Image (cartoon, rainbow over all chains, first blue to last red; front, side, top):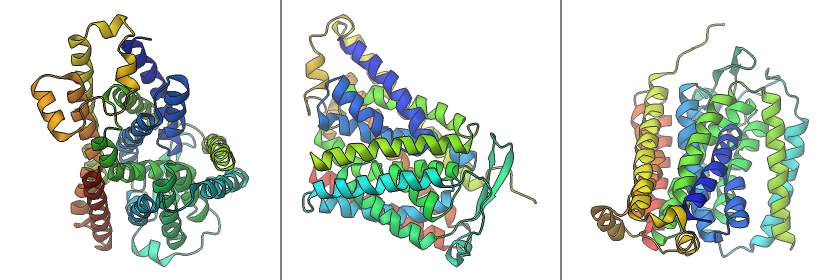
Length: 278
Length: 132
């Protein structure tokens, strides 16, 4: 394979990662890392470095559109980012102290549970029986967005803001500790605990993950884990893909987003269980 | 029910900041890739250098000094690294801008939350970079 072919193949794979990541609130690492290591033979350190770039690219590319479409709730995102960032710092410090094998198993099971819970949740766009949340009222977190698939403005309320904050701390810690993209944990937290519509959950997760990734990216960058030859086609492909994905999200029915997210959760859950048990 | 249909000024400014960061970094990265292939025509038809380019960690400019001097020499990979660094700074700049925007809104708590996020991000960025 010539370097030109390598760049083109990586670019095409990264477009797919960007589309999927933008729609599901993930960084695209679930596609980029296995593709680079297994298919293209890139060492894991450079694949992880490219994956960090992929997270930032998906987040910035998609969030630019989502924020303008009011799909990302920037108040919720900023509120939850406080504990998510603190968690990421904690995770970075705990890495190497805590035995990760057991953690892989625990979080593999947590993701499997989330997959079942999200799959069973009724796919209605109308929220029912939302418990009042005075903190969410005070911070004016409630909002609305226009859903192109449903062809109407979806007005939603935010609840469980304190539980959400706590879960984001856990999600941030896990992402710092295990190098698992935090999107797979952030989306279930917003969907299940805070009862946000699934599209708002994935778009707000997208808005957040770039910030968390950027804060840890400096270390990868200056340590030499971000190879320009690997990361450049990843960045460009993911940016293009996230642009496409951000256009598609509003048009695709929420039930399909939910099913696609469940599939990815099961996939990541299995990967984590294998890592922890073998 | 009356609903706000258009993005607020806050959302518009944040969206523009993200767009500008993404566009600038895309142009710089593209330029870096072009320079790389123009300076090394063999990359198009020979696979001899692939191992060195994509399979050896740290075999490319990655310290601030290497990147700056590489850009001065018109070194493609160094230009790519500059583009990647701009991409990396985009979310950080976005948070910094949101602090100022939230400060004009009620409740002020949002501005403090955004400032706390910025503080944590800058601290972990500085700590991580110093340790690298």
